[in-house]
Amino acid sequence: MKTRVKWVENVTFLGESASGHAIVMDGPEEHGGQNLGPRPMELLLLGMGGCTAFDVIHMLKKARQPVEDCVVEIEAARSEDVPKVYTRIHAHFIVTGQGLKESQVKRAVSLSAEKYCSASIMLGKTAEITHDYTVVDSTAVEDGQ
Image 1: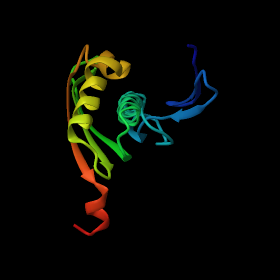
Image 2 (image 1 turned 60 degrees about the horizontal axis):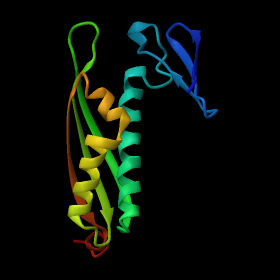
Image 3 (image 1 turned 120 degrees about the vertical axis):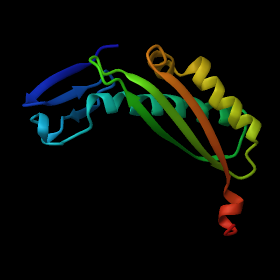
Image 4 (image 1 turned 45 degrees about the vertical axis):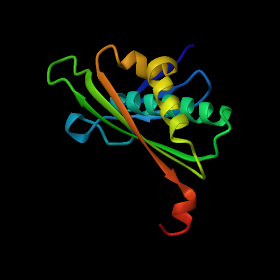
């Protein structure tokens, strides 16, 4: 895999992926940025969230679960000292569907965290990563419950 990052100005950079997509990264104003895009360290968490959500959806569909939505809310803490690596990361999955089996959601979340999500496993080398989940029955939501 090959990517490219080009300095634009001040602390603004343009990242270009191997798949042909681009994203602007920028810093906060107090560091010379214009707040034009996410911080590089935010992108690491977004990448982890995308990676693990991909796994969970893939496994649930493979298990023929009626998954309709999956949201991953991530909270993280960083070291006070340089390098300011992530030290704690918590991923909360909200998985919605009609009649989803909780056991299947639990299994998918666990397998992603422990075996399949490359981003989680890599970040787990410096951070304590935890996860939990909520299963939402869309039938109950539609009925107003």
